[in-house]
Length: 398
Image 1: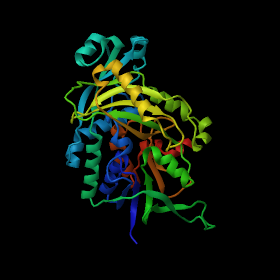
Image 2 (image 1 turned 90 degrees about the vertical axis):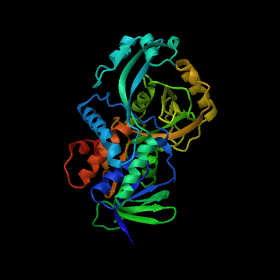
Image 3 (image 1 turned 30 degrees about the vertical axis):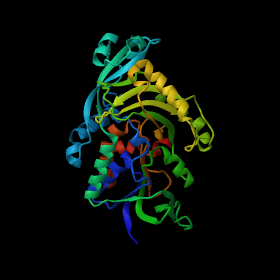
Image 4 (image 1 turned 135 degrees about the vertical axis):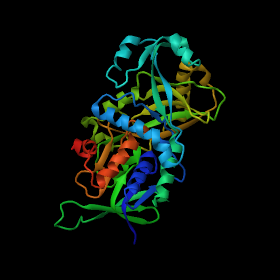
């Protein structure tokens, strides 16, 4: 019976990057992913790299490390991640005071510049000047989420890593009947077809992480939103910038619903703590397709159903106000779960009171933070001291 050093559960950007970095350190690694093709939050991400937006020494350092990693990542992984820099336009609604909105960004590492509506329309001719009171602008990074994840997976395979398409259904536990042990140990995973064994298991399952761990009797303070977006086929219409709302309601909803008062309710299906938010924005990828969104719903059931038709109407109506040319483009509705934590920082490391099980999830800016933190985590479990990884441990919520 083969046993691995690490089993990584989840083949999105978190699992792919972490598998690669662990294999680089010489560990034997098995990556398990439910779907044969990329789905969920990685597939439907905007994949923006907001390294300008750090507000603490920790986030500033991680954004800087992420930026440096992205400049060399394509060469290291031997695949083009489509990394580039774009002008980001943060639109300010007519009812808001541009100066007051601009002041809320003064604590950012790079403060966005407030520009006039006319200047914004010169940068992005598709903008509707009648719908905005002003615009903030800053340079931001961008990658292809599909190409970046594929690059990590291919590099992982070249290092000897093994990938299997399988749905993980549970955790293998040992030691729970031994009276001399004060806690059981996770020694592998069950899938729908077979059992795999490892010294360590790390959960990189994004928005489904909480539900999966809860089903195994493990509690951790990670949460999820139901996110919805529209994606167009490649189009001749050209966006010159990335356009987003200056006020991102999603983050306000996350902060409001990750407090201890809601903790027990999170494990009960059927709750919706706050009304859904709609953060209007659009970004065009190198292949010409445009992603438009996004609606976020805080529903405690990961399998809750939403109405695609009503969501599409709402997203089209809102984007039509800001970028009228996009409102009626042919597009497909998509839905996924997005993970978040109680303090907007990821959960990385051993899960308290349970040996052999780790988590690597809850990233607010995964494509910026994952590359440096995957590398740091691999170095840390290989024996290197790392104060940042310690700061991001799930133990901080115990």
